[in-house]
Amino acid sequence: MNRARACGQQALLWASPNPAVGAVVVSDRGVFEGRSGPPGEAHAELTALQAAGSAATGSTLYTTLEPCAHLGRTPACTHAIISAGVTRVVAGIKDPDRSVNGKGIAMLESAGLEVTLGVRAEEITADLAAYLTHRRLGRPHVILKLAATLDGRIAASDGSSRWITGRQARADAHRLRAYSDAVLVGAGTARADDPSLTVRHFDPPEGVSLGDLQPLRVVLGSAPARARLRPALELSGDLRDVLGELAGRGVLQLLVEGGAGVAGDFHRAGLVDSYVFYLAPALAGGGAGLAPLGGAAPEGISDVWRGEITDVRRLGEDIRVTLQPRRPHAHPGGPEPNAASVREC
Image (cartoon, rainbow, N blue to C red; front, side, top):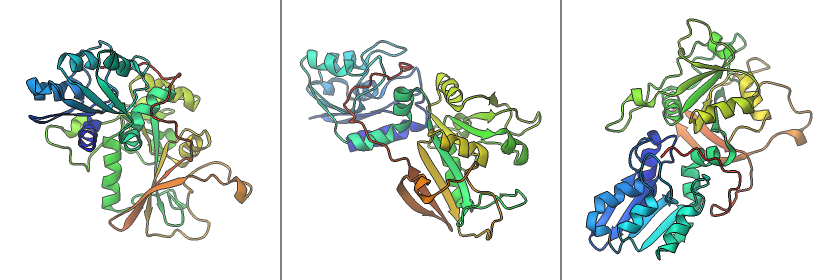
């Protein structure tokens, strides 16, 4: 399953809006790998079975996500698994998409295959966080990215913010863009900073070009006519409606890059799934500068929002801190009654 996870992680750059799945066929004649292709191309299980050929007979298939059981733009994986003569399937987590959601497992078991569910479930849930958020909540998985001084300022008192962090931190932020389907800023940031919001400082794997990785650029409000981020999708209104619009466009992961007002709005609405802070060894001092989250401050310390730090690492002279809300985790094999059905296949 670890090997299947590695295959799935490789597909994160191109599989969206489908899940980035990895699969491995293990038989007495060898081990054969597969990973999700772009929408319309073969799923991971089919690719692994094709690589195995006749060696799939009597084999065990490991897959990070429950195999699909319906015909879309590609054949149903469950039919191919049964036809190939696989005798056992080990799946990481159940697929919450309404068109699957247990149907694949039931079909395999009805055909007499042994099915094991839940292997490496916690790790795979993290790998597929964007897909799972999209299917379970009907909105993109939202990452809020902020670069700040160590005493918490994202801009000086004159509004200037380039560059707070160093080269390695900025390159890591471009990696986040590459793995996101869309990048969003407010109209104020579009006017003040004139960002391009493109992926530049990132080395894609062989066979993938930077042009393939450019995210949809989204502005809350109206961007200036000659803004560098054009062409861009301009949206306004309630943030939940904005996220619903993006979900309908196949956006699994949304990277919110500011400014402070937009960041504060997403935060207070409880719509941020992961906060990524790039902290520079710099101090603004005093009351100068702009805080990362706009809006009113909490009245007392008991009102301060608290999350869970899930990762801390050094990037050159800077530090990246990943923070997530404290939320109860549903069992990955449990029911998903509200799961959306928008799987492309």
